[in-house]
Image (cartoon, rainbow, N blue to C red):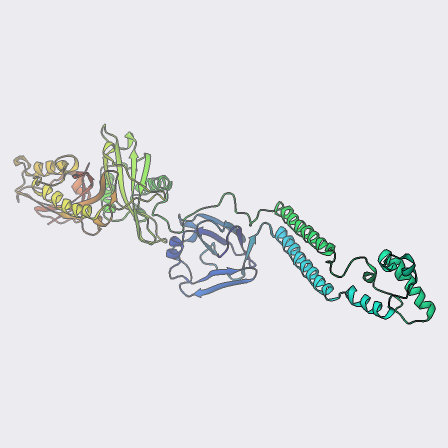
Length: 558
């Protein structure tokens, strides 16, 4: 809205009793959510009664329930809903919709009210200013008008009289012997006598005479300027009154229009996870995962996606076959990092320090999760998860908006190269020179020990082959973050074990492989698919790959 220094209240009412929803959101979320949906957009408002708006055709309703979205900044529902927001805060998008997606906005009216402080005082100042200007206009007009009406000069009128009288109209002038007439000694009295004499003699003359013609003084002296002095005093008086009025009125209101004391600042362009939301996300995810694990994987696709969902489904099958119960980890501390994105899709890393009851072993572990979100209509999906020792978790460097820079491009190349090195090690157990550290530890070593047991002479198998390659359905190299001293990213390698037994042997690979078997075919060869998630960290020039475990995800007999 093209205004500032105040607040606006938007009110929506429905005359048909329809339950309404009002919510504010960052523009990137609202635009994504309403993409392709029929909507009326108000783009500009001119008070008091004008608005620019346009209708965009599309689907009758959004893909997801409007009240279930987690990115709303504020929400409210009711037959009458209202939202007040600060015009000086960062821009937000306000959405009004039916709370029930099957309803419509028929019978809904929307009104806007802007609160403006100081209008009364400003009005008084305007009136005072108008009066002030009007007074000045009248004052200067009257001054100009009065300057047009001037009395005749005294010299012109008196010289004519003296020439006609010849100085003999008053006989007392000669008897005094002083050479001066009575007009000079007492002009007011002398003038009156002359007029009386003329009247007595029947001579014509004016019945009245301007008072200036009988004032003392000579023709050469300037007239007094008392009128100008009065004008200046009047001007000073009016100006002082105007200034005083302005000062009094300015004390009655905040000038200019007062700004709110605590604006609600929310960025229009948001990061994938706002500061402070990581803990909320991890809590919601843990609760949802616990519920899903208890329901044997029901709705797992609402919180996870490949490749992680393949691991979890296999774990559910294995636990069910072994009569075990799975549960989600509990976290004592949560950190999240993401670049600042202005459009979907989004992604971020979440780091949750697990309590010791959630993991095996003596070391404190932190689960690193890669989360993506395709649009505002979809929920965040955890795409990868792996544990690392807590003391190895690097520090993220976030800016004042909570955003973390992406890793340099060279780290993306390192991640691609490292995935090949991990694959090679899982096949032959040999770490290449220049490859990442940590390949002979943790989950990498555990898998190599498993392959070694299968190849042992006492196992009875004729042949055990291993084929490994990087997981390519998710571009891990495009989702990496900078850290305080380097960078961090994730990856995964998928391996296939081909195990052949002698024809006179029965295959028995244990409960784990049997639990994830996808067919009931009889044969002497079995193929086992495994997943190897890992975290790659760079500190200075040193690369380290960390994997605490590996997963059997499927098997089949050939």
